[in-house]
Length: 316
Length: 251
Image 1: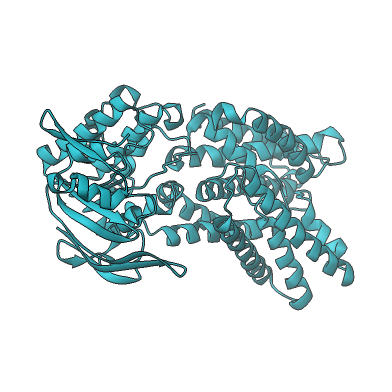
Image 2: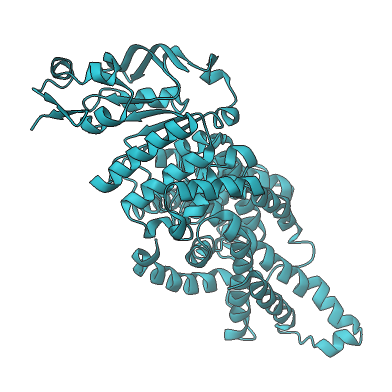
């Protein structure tokens, strides 16, 4: 599939997303400069659409970077525990820095996410058995342990309500003034694009990369920092969106290969399109109510993930 | 010229390389032979700065390897390690293009593309260049990696068991190709090799290692001698002259 088609589809989906919702906004109302219609679009619909697109692009590219750096197709912010660590970080910031600004919360969450991911990478290096399925299982177990700790403290300090809003990705609360933190991911994505070539080489392994004069550790650390901050930002604004970083890069890998130079744009755009579809579907299925996007992605993602697992030998 | 002075390397408390000093001449194939665990691969890794030695110094053309910029070194010395398991979906051409990374950081110039094409045709993979690596046979894959090293265009090429996974035909092709590199371009090639007859027929010099030390070193004909081989492998090996080659029989 050509990139341009993918972009056109995504733009169409984005426009659809603007017009789906309980409050009816019609194209003609916008054309006639109807103030109320414009208000809805500017305060609620547009922020929602923008945040979906940004979250979609960033999470799938995070997944892509992690898969490349770990040389494992099943590693992603979800399966490496990065998301659970970020949530623990948010809990800590709620407990100890009650009045923290969103930026500070994000920093704490990102620090936790980074620590967790580095821990995972450390464990990975010490593992004798580099089985493709074994590695993400380790990550998932680690993530669950961290998640249980977070839940325990959340229960103890009566923050379960607060925590659960980060459990399930949800765009319904996104409004003007509540999503702007996501813009932090834009410069990070630019870094990711600039480093694309280096991530590909680093993905070939430390010896291989060193032989080509690539500062391996530096490149890996840049990648992990980008992943950690983006994950923290997305969880703070939208919540956990599972599987996105896992399936989108894998789908693109099937038809574009694993040279990041060729696949990073496709991965980003497909991630946005996929999330838009899930969100629109979630808004329509039980209209006028809404299924949270985390659940939608989870359901659709599990299906695709299973499919990929079953025909893994065919392509990887 | 590569000069190593008193290199030592420990893995834990085990000394895998002990006080190894060696000079490798330019424009020749030098083969490193010896039993498993003799430290051949470790030595090559240290010479190519992939592994830091615990003692001693490696000089490459007179300069300490670990004091040079990694990027500059990548234009002078290339190493290919044993297991090159690629799980990534990359085409042959993409892999070979990595060889130009030290020169262009992945944004290939016309000159880089030219070098990549030359390297691919040098190992006879032109028809395969758009195939994914996992679709290739073991021999083709190995040749693709060699092409990458060629594209890196370094004076020194270090290969750790390049004949692994190759059948006889491809093993011979590989060695002839390496020989050609020395003759055509004056490259300096260091090999870790297990098949002693390949070492005998194709190399200019042989370094024999055992238990982390160099036990014999010199021109091929001096090393491929029954008594020398006996001391290396602890095995009775007959050496015969067959059409001007020294062939070992040890079965």
